[in-house]
Image (cartoon, rainbow, N blue to C red; front, side):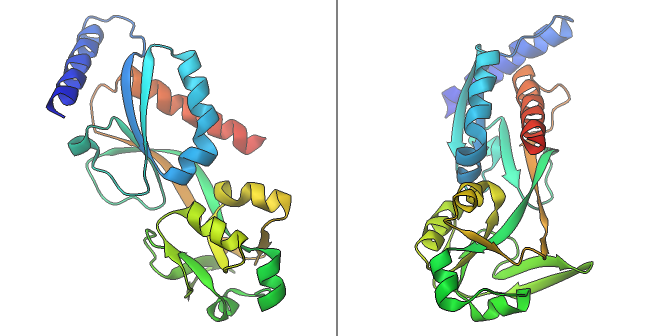
Length: 235
């Protein structure tokens, strides 16, 4: 760990010397990134591949984890995080937004019925995401008001794809971001319910340590992700 941090510090010093000398900098070196597992798998694969094609001197070291990691202590240059951000001394840049949807398999809905309003969820098997800030509550916007429904179910997990697989098997309803369930919705393996109710937006953020001179590799990666996510949102 000492060696890896020392190498990073030396690389940062070299880049700072280039900036101080008023030289053009080319992104290079190792870029260590942490991001949520499901978001990395569903959204970032092609983005990362295209970035390294454009910037071949950058080597990406990516950790997929739904846990909140201390960037400074663990030596990360950058994190991608979803949802409400806690207060910290880190810099955050918004990359985009996602919405969560309530959905279930056709077999579950056939057996247990389709909820017609958020209050109906109390009588259903709701598969919970254990790392959310809202705990067991599922929150919606209805007629300009926030509606919070306490949900219970047989399964709780700290990964959205685990819950998705359980829902596909008919275990219950899930309330997950579109990037996790989009393919299953298109294929008819999952069905969205409560479509008339608006779920709260989830912000997608790039988080990095506060530095006066942002390294070229972090700056170009964040700018590139913003551009690519905006493109995919239009498409």
